[in-house]
Image (tube, rainbow, N blue to C red; front, side, top):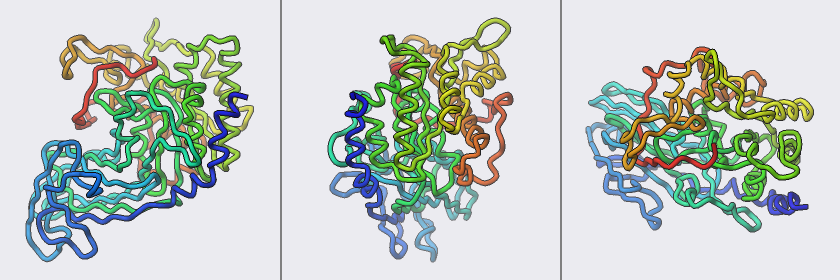
Length: 442
C-alpha cells in the first residue's frame, strides 16, 4: 500500500506533466561588442544574469568581448576568457536543442563545454584563425515540482545544485575559449534517457567528484536528452520515498528510457524483507512495470564494482548477490541489461591495483582548498574514472541493441574495458567549485 501511495502523484499527473514538457521559448544570442546578426539578441560582456533579464553571465564569472570587424555580423565578434565562465538562460522544464558556434576570425581558440552540474558536452575542440565550429546537443532541464501537486524531496546538498534550479546553464572552459553564438530551441519530441541511481550515477556538482551519468551526454548527438535523477546515498527504496520515481514518471513519454542502477546502498538495508532476492528484486520489478505502463523502455544496469582488490590483482565482489539479482530480473522480465559490474571489474583489473587509484578520488592532502587530509575513496570516481565507466555504459547499450544507439555520435570508436584510455591523453579543465566532503553512500 505504501508503494502505491508514493506513486499516486505520478499516476494522476502523467498526462499534464508530459504536456508541460512541450512548452518553452526559443533564443538566439550573438555574443560580442559588434553589431548583432539579424534575428539575434546581442549579448555584451557586461550582461550579468538576473532573474528580470532572464539571461546573462552567471555565478560571478565574466568574459571579454572582442570585435574583429568584417561583413559577417555573427562571426565578426565573440566573447572569450582563459578562465571558466557560466552563461545562464531562464527556461521552463523540458528538453532543448542547444547549438553553439565557436571560433575567431583572426586568432586560435580552445573550447571545452559542460552543462548544468558539470555534464560533459564537448571535449577540447580547437579552432584555427578563421575557422568556426558549430555543435548541437539536446539538453534536459528539470525542477523539483511534480505536475498535479507535490515535489521531489531534495537533500540539503542538492538545494544549490545547478541541475535543480530554473535555469539552463552552460560552462565554457578554454585557453582561451571563443563563444560566437548560442541558440536554444524547445525539443519536445526528443527521446529522454532518465537515470535512476546513486552516487556512482549522479551529476556531481563539485570537483574532484564525478559519476558516469554526467559523462553520458558527450556521446550523444541531438535527439537524445539525458535526464539524470540519481542522487548520492540513495537506494531503490529512498529513490521512491523522495518522490523521484514519481517525478520521472510524471514527465516520461512513450519511447523514453529509464536506466536503473542501484545496489551499493540497498545492500546496507537490514529490514526483515530486505535483501537481494527480496525487497530489492520486488522494487526492481516495480520500476520496470511503472516505466512500461507509460510506454517507456526500462534498462537494468548492474552496480559499478568498488575498487576492492584481493590476491593476484583480482577485484573481489563487494556487492554480494545484488548484481546477480539484477541479471535475474532482467532475464525474468525480458528487460535489456547493461552488466556494468562485470565491465568495471575488467576495467579496474586492466588498470591494476595502483594505477586504478587514478580513476577514483585518491588525492594527497592540500590538492583542493580546505583539504588538510588525503582523500582516499574506492567507490566514487574522479572525472577520468567516470568517463571510462560511461564508455562502458555506451558499449553496454550497443551490446543490448538499444534503438538509442542510432543517436550516438557517428564515428565513435569502440571501447574495450580491458584496454582503458591512457590517463596521459585525458583532459578535464576543472570547474570553479570544489568540495572535500565525500558524497553520501559508499
